[in-house]
Length: 83
Image 1: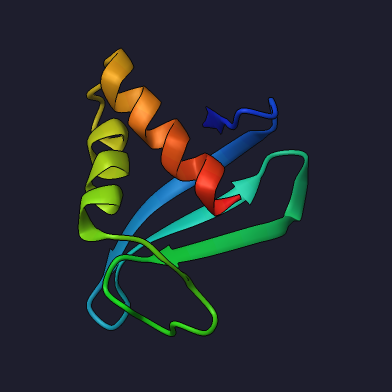
Image 2: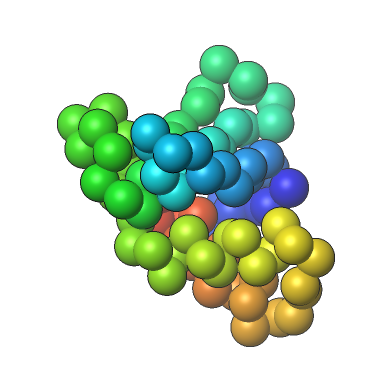
């Protein structure tokens, strides 16, 4: 769970699938109908937001349990840009 700079809470799921590659599934906590997907591998560029592999890796590190203020700040900056 992450909060954007507007204090909205988002659930960010880090995903990898053979067909889709690396992507994020981002859902607003209070409004589950608001779902975004962001691809690090160019999957469906007209439907998915595009992120860099590095941006995906930032969220993957957080999901693995690594948590420091610099990493969290980078992730929040990426989330703010996406939402």
